[in-house]
Image (cartoon, rainbow, N blue to C red; front, top):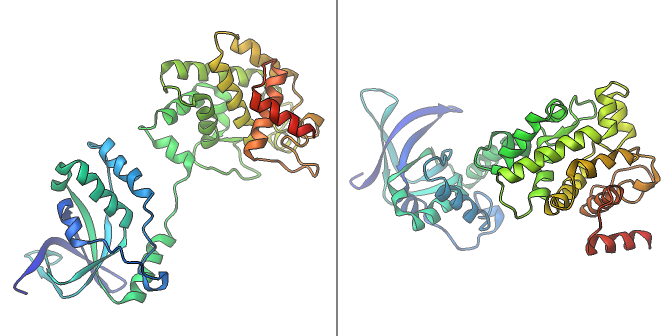
Length: 353
């Protein structure tokens, strides 16, 4: 090959087939992987159609974290002539690829598109690199299988563990601090799972607490004032939620708390977040702990008539919709002697029809 691409690579073997890992400058991405805008039927494509809505989000991630962004490798098949030229070390050398060869992305098309968009805003990115795993192209069927294998067995990170590790999300940082500061939450919040099993030792998920705090935050700045309010609010909730206290005092078991009460259900935690959102807006008018102390007047049993059609169906099953969250918050607000908004009043009227 007189004219070719030349990539310094390391050679490996998987399934008795050679592959090569190289560092590719981002400025070469556009020329190596030109975009094909022509519509192709799904059965004739090597992977899914590009989801345009994901690209700005990923591009913004790069641009907003210019000194700390990180990407995993792209995976690509080479459709054309190539050869590996080893150096003195047998598995290290140069991968020479004919200029007329085509590179097909098997995994990473959204990362590639986002990189190109980010480069258009910050050209200095062109001098940075991304690792690419090169495979020999063995036809459409093999490429489709590679895409399936690369994605089928990928395990999506739970929202809870993402919020546990994310140091860029201020709300996630605040939520972690609050959970750690309040002993009951620290003991019973699962920091990894989004869904708890029937016999889980935890009662809440970190993701549920995060979403409840998001209802408090709304469009406010996530600053020290917000953090201070949330800590005070959830400490007060923890102190005045009688079923939680009964568990702490070992008057009831976790199983009994789950089966007979709604006080740990996600819909109630979200409703408490909604109530907290009202209190933070009107904290000059209310003593937060005094208001929240009236949680003690609420009957949290599943069989309590006040919850039927709000969060409990006549057959005893939980209702988890956004409407249920609003109606649960309404009931809590009424017990806390907090006024309902116009929207909340309308929801109450619809409930009685």
